[in-house]
Amino acid sequence: MVNFSSWVPGLTTNSLDGTEQLPIVDAGVNGKVTTGTIGAFASSHYDYIPQQQILPAAYVSGNTATGYAANTWYDCATGPLTTNIAADTFTLSQQHGLSDGNIVYFTGLQSTTGVSNGTSAAGPYYYVRDSTTTSSTAFKVALTNGGAAINLGGTSSTTVNAWTIGPSITLTTGTSAMIRIGAIIYTFTQTGPQYNFMAFNISGATTRTLSGQPYNGNSYSVPFLGGAPATFNMSAWYPVTGLTAGVNTFTCKYAANATGLTPNYAQRFISGVSLG
Image 1 (cartoon, rainbow, N blue to C red):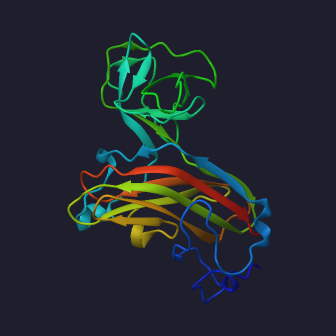
Image 2: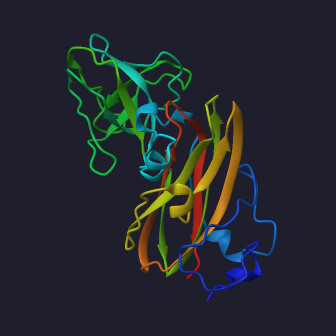
């Protein structure tokens, strides 16, 4: 049994039931837990999405008590995009930040054909190509990585979002694991407090799906709070217990609670290791 209480700051018991909300103990992707030793982390796994993406305002809950409690967790998106039928491209008014090989799914397609709206769980998924550089404003998509560009038809759609899933890691675990998540988030002027969250779902041998109010209702959320323009670079470690032993996947999700807010996330990462 792992002795969590010997090295997790502020933890006074070694009995974890998966409901604990640990404090943020470091900032930045190069930080580390500041007390104790984590010798098992030599076998950790890591996933990283560098590009800056948004949680579109239409997917942000209101900052009333009712709206806040009804928060839903999402992926991050690039948008709003416009489809250029003649060029078979998706175009943003600024740098899209995507790279060839990125996997995306779409929402907001109206009368454009050749691609379809999708969901995080079921797709359909597409591979980015012809992104040129991450500073470009246009890209194409294919059905396979490096495959032929899809020919777009119909008429232009102007409110399209291209969503990326994750980052995520898949571990063969026992009944416990240690997971670290973090990101840089940019907040903007907003009446009242802005709460922006990053957390993770678990799937595979174990199923745990985020739902409801993130600040009090979920064990594994990193909260970013701002009431004025600001940039936060934060991360946290979370012990996850009560897992079903086997292959488990940990996938990052996002939520925010200020009406009209469009939070921007960049340099999102997740790492972790099985603790037996």
